[in-house]
Length: 362
Image 1 (cartoon, helix red, strand yellow):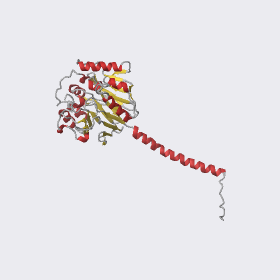
Image 2: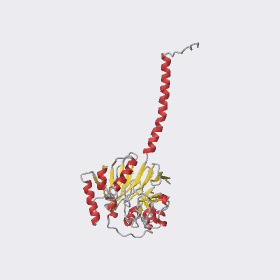
Image 3: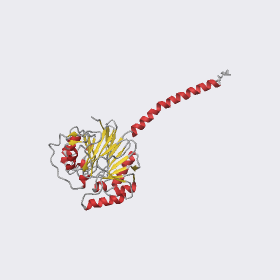
Image 4: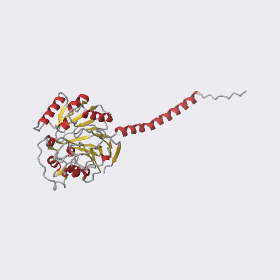
């Protein structure tokens, strides 16, 4: 027969003391965990995300600020069974957004504005921005402009001019060019004499909508992204010569999909891009002269391409690892996703391969 073990009874006051001690330790542990949760949230949302969407030689570039506010630049081609709208929506899902806060149309060529009617059937847009009336006397551009006006009728709309800001919490977005005009200076940045102007060739005047493109500089902390739409050579040179108002650029969306009507050395060399992305198609743009100018730009570390330029040669195409949709690829529609930090560092992910490369601001 076992001898009963005497039980120790806690006094009520002792019980209260021990309970208080346990609660204090629990509170301390939760306090230690809170910064970890906040850090995890910051690492996920404390960045600018830029998606260069494959619209087969047009433009559709989605920017999502750390705040979740969004800017879409252009919408790709008309309909095609909703192909381009679907690809924009895929990027939106990756970014975790369901609406577009601002939609900027750089100009009225169909590879930029044509996707608006289909997109607005699927996605809510807070504000439409453009350079004002169409300036090109061509049937296709008049038709595209008319379809755009019909699609945005009754919706918030604003005409932007050089120097205007597009207000996105957490970002600075300044309009550098619009409707054939350009900015002389960016607030807070001193224009610098451009040594590349003296050797720049004379570019022909361009009467098309390309020369009217709206172009923007996006700044997030120390990170800078430049998108000038399809701005052509004469307007590029006018923007940066004799004095260049644009600071060094971390990520450059190559003008005009890499057409040789654009990408003057006076512009490309003066902005010193660290990384460039060319939104060309398999059989559109990606011209050897433009590719070479960007490739040789001082300090450039990488030139990405949405497609292999199949009408060019191997010497004027980037390595396949830097191409989203190479020749012979089983599927189209792969895009580049850029994640930028306020420190200026950023990464580029090729969604075809899943490979991410990191870049540090110099």
